[in-house]
Length: 354
Image 1: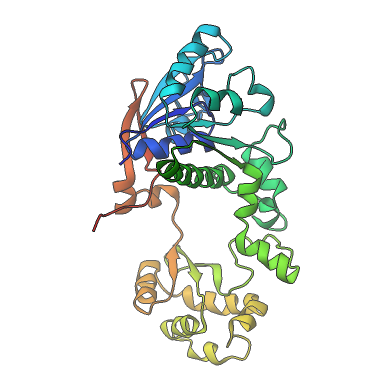
Image 2: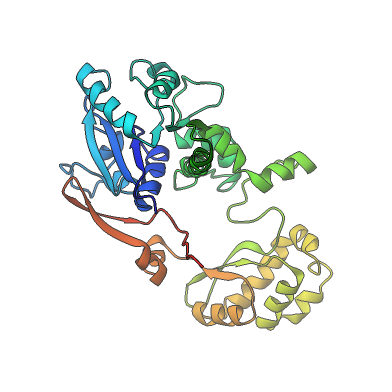
């Protein structure tokens, strides 16, 4: 769809490169500029113990750098800067994530970039909104914007196992760049689009933010549970050892759950009739449900719940999740620097013209 678009990416790690790969997957020509002095994007070296230590790429690097041309340049070198400027003048989009203090020496200041290419869409990711020189990494943002305080359990706080703040910021920047391109088609003018990891993280708090802003409810770590709904997030072990999770969001769904389990009296119990009652008495409810669920095999029970339109799912590990037919269709194999790589497709949407 974007085969005529030229995107230059100087960003490293995950958020910025994920934006670049978004455009690569849509057909754009994406040229990734990597720091020649340091041996390229630092994530080339972020390897699992089981990975080849001599490979020029890692699994982490491969996850967001598919479909790009990779060029090693030192942007503080005069000749390399000239090479970069030639590309920049031709480009439609520039993606950066440098610290503010490095903009001048890298030739990436907003003023210089705009002067070289007034129609360019310059997308920039920074860490903290009001602390331009502070290095930002996902786990720090998860801590400072409240995510870790809500994740895991009271005794064992946890971070989300992916760099979710980077992912949120990448989605925000993609939206901004696409809107700026749409605007450029109408005005002929370029634009500077900026998002901070901090702002993206705060935006991602959604209902938890509103719970506090409207009811002064400070979210506590609940494991997989939901503060507003029950049984939603409760985990149960079945007779064959398989585990399921429930996501019952309405009184009607709860009644259907009870009928499926042969526990119709639970749906009429005053402690559980309404969602607000179930949230207040969720521990007692979970104990009663667990006894019944433990008598069923997982797949058989999930089939019955699906037939009754009760939201529920199997608790899969990543091997099981990536073995599903959809995940298999979304798994792509390619090469980076001559090395075979595998990754999951970044764009999950599909567009079908009428």
